[in-house]
Image 1: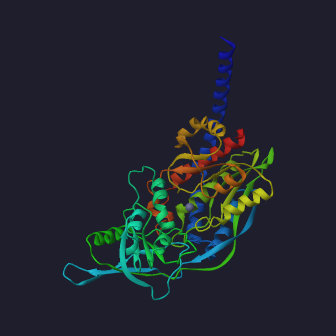
Image 2 (image 1 turned 90 degrees about the vertical axis):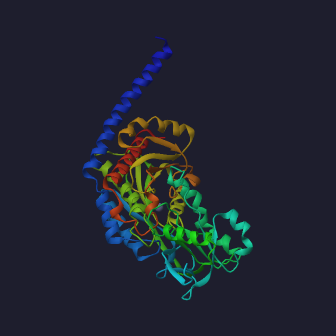
Image 3 (image 1 turned 120 degrees about the horizontal axis):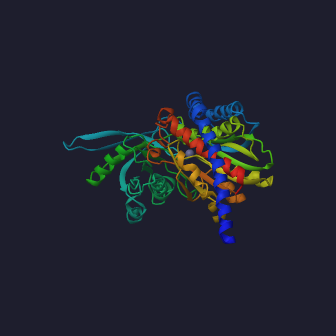
Length: 459
Ligand SMILES: [Zn+2]
């Protein structure tokens, strides 16, 4: 045996025993989570006693208290609040919309549309707006039809592209119509905007989500339509019908207020000044319980801490569970967390997020150096028994990305199966009853395994 081959033999032998030990330990984490998880129970309390918790709302404060109490009860060594200024957008009542058009018999037909004003949008008062609706399938078409837009309600009907297997890709592509569609229509004199909900669901629930106005243009009201209503409206307009639309929303901003990131720590034994963050956002839209988005991520992150502590694991580094404030309509909690880390010159090794729903885990998406990525990829066999079969190079989630940008921290996010998430994302059916207990737990146990390996071996 040449010296080189012998060296290789040693290396593989070492790796095999290392992974054997790790596979036994991860089995222990898995057993703890699958037998004793508190994740679903904690989610039940969050959903049913707090419910909706948009930044600045009374629900936000109740949720923060829930976070403090839950982190303490699950065994955090230290729990504290990190204050940050948050916006306070309110819907201001029920959003109303409808259409009238001439039916086949020549009679006027009136239909009510199921709508939700987009987050951060501004309403138009009690009288609402009435105007003819113009169908715009995409921004190219908007440019072509720009002379016809003035005085109208623009209806963006850009669907999820069904050819994307990952629904997040379709969401990313269609999302631009929600975010910048209203201002682009306002530029050509539109009075209001209807957008097709960012979903591929089979029901008619509208899906809200934040929009972003260009401050140099009129801030026109805008609302998302459920898919059945969107299809119906598109059909009428394609038939060449003159459709008169109506939209009334009372959405507005109240003055900014103070919200908090809720933080719980498990102190590191060897490198207490080095941090591994595992987190999710605590806020949710006002129309539902925020069970998948992102109550699930919150209770999974807390479960990582609980399970590691329950099996007697003493982390080398300090593990920080962070329940971020204001992801949905501002990201101010995440920005504050990164700013604070930078100003205190903290050492952040890794930050992991769960914000894609509490569904069957499939992968982790990681934003790190190629060397780090290579190291993590060697751990993949340890995850296969628990449903994670891939480490994908990518960004990491919204709440950990400021840390990645500001501190160059390696970041990652859990990527569960995406097929059902956008059926309920930002819609009124995002409730506990649509979360499957075992899928939620499997996500938590894979997160705990990754945190354990990063803590043990570094990056
Ligand atoms: Zn979310």
